[in-house]
Image 1 (tube, one colour):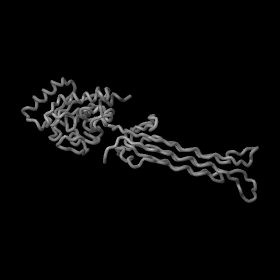
Image 2 (cartoon, rainbow, N blue to C red):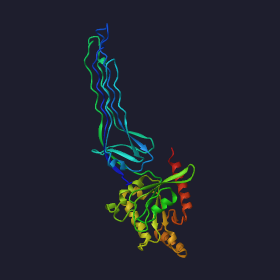
Image 3 (cartoon, rainbow, N blue to C red):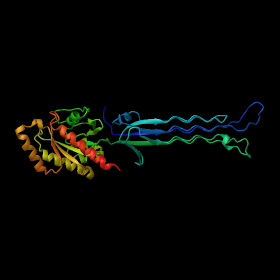
Length: 341
């Protein structure tokens, strides 16, 4: 399924049913008085978080959602039936805003969380509500109030603990498929993921984290080139960035230059994102002669003047993955403890 991270929809809540004008008519009671009941409430429209979804693709075709109107009131003080609410399932990380004004309405971040986006109208009042000592046969009633109508802009920002960052063919998709159950498309030629993939990395019961494979970024992305810049926003939610770079690119590119170029793109897109905790992963070590590997790794680290954690790995050969995943888990748990009130 194609990944879609933005969509526009229209939601219409139902209007309230009108109140009734009715008078009690029973044998031997010729003047029974008013007994018109109230109208039912119109249905509201809600968004509900669903952890089983990771795209807004369903809204490419279903763009209009409408709740039913409330039923009118009836005699014998019977209240009209209220309409059922309409619930729209959305992936976690969905941000909702008014399409015309851009005003933010809310955000859905947890499974089962509900967000009211269009409130149903209230039912009208029947004539039984208007009787008094001076008005024994009221014919007044009120119609139901209209339901809200809104045009909404939905934007999805993937919720993940760890985000993979790198140029196309840096080995991101291979890594996520090696450490999780996610199965993104992988190719041997310079190929970039077309949409983010989420994978759950589980070490043991109760210890797991979510990792996101973000489409590769190319130089000039901050000015709109390529696909990756469209998805860099998904990295803004992550607790840790893993910066992958091919240790021996087929085109002979310099890994150090690639790291610097991507750092520049990050800074242009979001200065805060550029300062996020970032670890360096030198990938595809299985494609380098073992006698040259240590020297090549040392050269890259020295020229980068890299101060943070770094790992030399091979997802294909599963070299260095256990240590990497263990370190990530410890880091995530440490951050979670820090975030606790």
